[in-house]
Image (cartoon, rainbow, N blue to C red; front, side, top):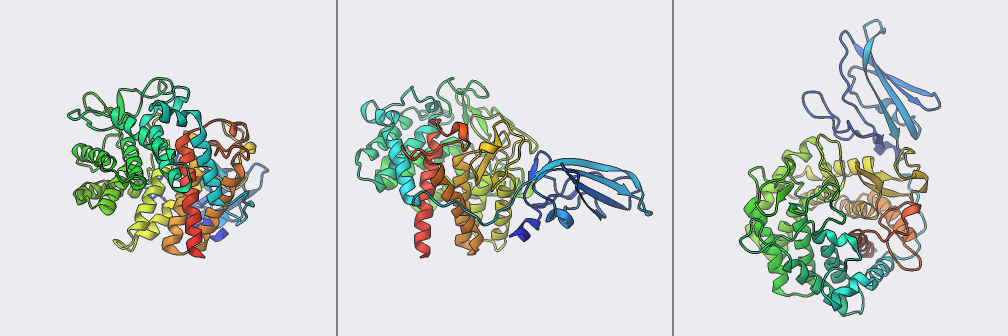
Length: 491
């Protein structure tokens, strides 16, 4: 298994391809860095030094060479790298640069013993959601319970209620679970922008200021989130085939088509009232592409094919070219220049590529490179780096981190990796993907609350008792059900 970590991930070349890892501080796969050439240098001496003082050195012709010659020997821990330029006689003529980073532990093949079956775990988690007072309120009053503050993100959180109860209605014997989903969908459709508005039929990203006053404005729409709501409507339509939910999803997709930029993407943030863009950032349109794809392949709505293809071309022209996998979240500040990388959109694109390997023979290799990036920067198999805002020794591993601005273990982030590895296994047949997915899924069952069945959002000891984000719990439950079904299909 060690050999796989000797494959560099999209190494940069000065003047040709950018170095994506300028803000990264940990590496599992062998890295290379964008260091400068030294005048008069014929070669470069790389010295990696551990905190204990041990040194691992080699020479290369370029200061941006991967650390391959010594990578297997470097132990897990904090490393200081210095690169000096050497003249023809081997004397130092200047420093090309230096970096400090954490050499992260790779996958060893070990796994925890699962606490229960994957499907059983998911059903218990959905049981817990169904029983929450703010879920039951949808049956009696048909609107969000103000006691659960995260309803201030309607598209995401009300959408999660719809998805979770649509799924739950198919794995349990509680008919009113689907009624909860319907009531939530009716509410979200009811508070969406009216026909004729600049973003007609889009549900709001922000509802009030309880959680949103740090970085956001409730007068804005973050363009990645209406697609999440539309996906929830489609999931509800599967459970209760009523045209009104399919039509609600189509209306959202039509509005996306109306506002698609010539680049193929959309402004990440826009003003709800005027339609003006509120950010220079363009959105990572993976969820929008997925929405178009569902409507095309599942419902025969071929009119969305052109917009889907244009959005995918934007992905090809941008992150698939420069590996700027920008983190985009409704509760985080906007970022530039690789300062806040994340793996959610990256893995979504990888899955899309794997689904379309028939279109291009190179898609599988590209998808696997993206998955290596996601593992490299966001998966913690063991021994997390010690310098974090929350205490790494209390992290439950293996786990996955969310984004640089929230570089802590999150349950949904772990599920994202499980889902992506399952997709990779289904296409490539490589057993390593199932082994990694299983190790993560086993840990999901271990961190699950033994009494209530609740899936924790944050995977560190101090936060296990927090109520958390129901969209995260929903995604984990859905992933665990799908993983269980996939494994049954392999038997």
